[in-house]
Every structure is written in C-alpha cells, then in structure tokens.
Image 1 (cartoon, rainbow, N blue to C red):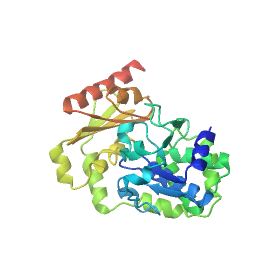
Image 2: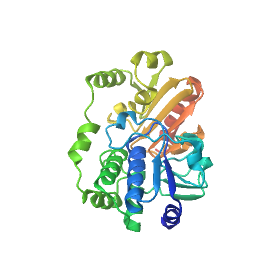
Image 3: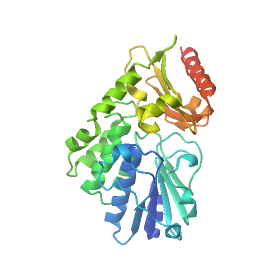
Image 4: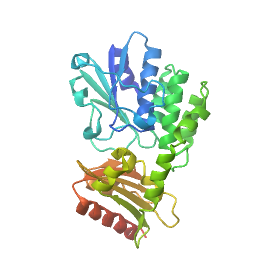
Length: 313
C-alpha cells in the first residue's frame, strides 16, 4: 500500500510535511513521527515540518514548526497528513512542491495530492504512519514512537472508540517495543489547569437536551470572547463534555467566530459524517465537523441530526 510514497521519499532530498490546521495529537504526532522516521532512515535528506503552533500539544518533543521560505519547495516533495480537504491544510504552499503525497485516515472527501494513501479503517493517521514504517522496514526511534503513540491514544480516546481494532493494538505494540514513557504522555495529556476545569464546568451547565437522543451547546461570539481562550479550546475542546450522558447518542458543539459557526459533531451510535459533508465539512463516521454561515444554519444542522435518529429507529 505504501510503496508509491516510499518511492517518492527515496527520490526527493527535500521533504516538507504538512497536516491540518489547529493540530490535535494525531496531526502533530504523525507529523513529528514521520519527520524522524525519514531523518533516521535517510540521514542525508532535509526534512521540515510546517504549520500553525501546536498549543495544547506543545509538550510533545520537537513540536516547534520550521519556518521556511518559498524557495525550499523548489524540487521538493510535500507530504500532507491527517487531512481530508484542501481547505484544512495548514500551509497552502504545498502546491509549490514538485511532487505531493497524502496519508490520511478520514473518510474520503476529495483528492489532494498526486499520490494518496487513505484508509479509514485505521483509528489514526499515526497508525497509518506506523504501518508504513513496519511495512517498509524504516527506522523508528523512541522519539518517533512516542510521538506516534501519543496520536494513537488521542484519536482512539485511549483505545475506547470503536475505531480501535486488533490492527490498532498490533501497531501500538510495535511502538511500545521502543523505550519511551507512557506515563509521561498521560501526565501531560490529562492534567489540566484549574482554570480549564472551571471552564469545562461552565460548559456542562450550558448543555441543552432535545426531545431526541441529541444534546448540544451553543456559544455566541460575545460568550466566546468572554472566556479568554481560543476558539479551538471552546469548540473541539468542549464538545465531549456531553459525551457520557446516558440516553444521548449524538452531541454537537456550536461556536460563533468571525469565520462562521464552528460545528463539532460526535456520536456513539450513528454515522453523522453525511450531515457534516452536507454542510461543507467532513471527518469520521462518528466524529466530524463543519463551519456554517450563521446560527440558522447551525440549527438546521441540529434538526438534521435529530431527524437522523428517527430514520435509524
């Protein structure tokens, strides 16, 4: 499956690795992991990682992005990771590269690169990058393994989501054969500042239940500004405060921003991806997102989610 991408990696001396904006553990973990797999396997190659700041995952080693000029893309290979749509890519200069490739585990949305490996059976892009290394016999250092393992546990919900499979544990076991501290990963991932815990409590009080097994939170622009945190923290960071309510099968977090209303959709039962795609978004079967123009469109999406539960009864 990975042979075409391996051939490109072998061919090009300069490789620039992209991923989606607002990186989560999987985007950043796959980016750092692949960087070090390539550097350790082909020491003569120049490998760069680009994109916006890692913020929540800044504790990960080597998570500071490279600043490079447009000229670096001349005659280079650009690899895009963990991204289903062009609009989500962190740096659009990948189009300047001589060759492009993509590795992704989201449901297919559109073609992005000249060479593509997309497989939604994997719980994470980190799992796919690990499989690439396993299949190709490339070097995986403890740093690369720790980065990839971090992405695997975040995108699988600590191996709780139903995207977790026997394949997941095979790749995780391969990574754990390297020496790194899982305790260090969990300590950084799941320890929060008291201010964040207080913010989460405020969002719990904002939960709205519908007459269907659907819950939602709606945050106005004025409310968002008053919290003093970034939109990513409010939208993706708070969506799962609704994730363990008995009798709730779908939950949605709507956040007003300058660009529109960010919609984070989750389910423990239904495939909500078609609804996200209907509104210009995408993602996974049970974890997707989109950005809509205004509150009216967000409420229309909510009605579609409620209708979905009726259709599936």
